[in-house]
Image (cartoon, rainbow, N blue to C red; front, side):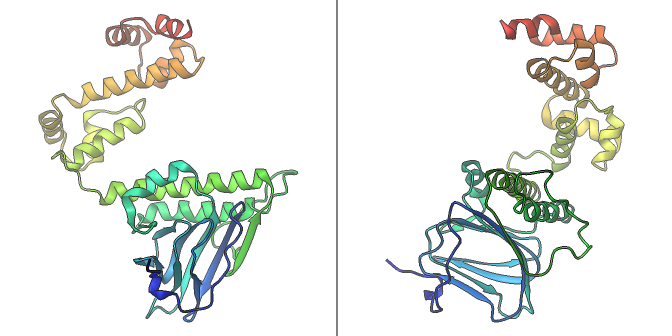
Length: 308
């Protein structure tokens, strides 16, 4: 069976034990490379912040630039280095055992041989990811006593170019994994939203309006505010929305608010009046009427039935 990964001619580098969470940040110059003929026992996550790197795993390979998340699964020969022609490679990295749900998020970005490349994460999300990596580095050092270490501003110089921490304690490991989970989720979700084609034929602006409604059903949305949010005139937006989805924007908003209210009734002990307000209904009487029409019972009876 071929080894690939450019035949791995260099001396093998060890990988951290699979039970640990190891996080670090490097800024490496040309000549830096790591080779593992048997791969690693753990997953490797890399997030490039500057320059470029080249990562190979089995027969798959990719070039990583700023804003790219590249993940190498365990057990496959791999190699990574500063990319040819690049002046440096600045990147965060994490060795750990991936949570099962992450593979589903990463699957659309598979390049083969358990290499996943999430390219061009939007700029607005990168600050959030950078903050999460910095949080990981601090949490990995937490002993479990007192409060976890504070994280300074991104430009305060508190994280040197080469820094590594190992999360030994159970609490520190779970905190760092929670931050990494948010990184994987945000990177894959936002890259999908910007890169995946919509094969349904629905105008992307209408999909965006649906997302605005679903994200916060209780907000004071109107045809005018939704139209402005997708850069359309109110009349054009209302016509296009109804034409493509078969119902008006306000009908979609009502359905989203009722679903939000039902979930609050199911999951919380909030009074019905507060559920109504949190779901965007100014009048409790109107809320009771439309909720009963939709779910066949008033809000209080609906909640009581779930409890029984």
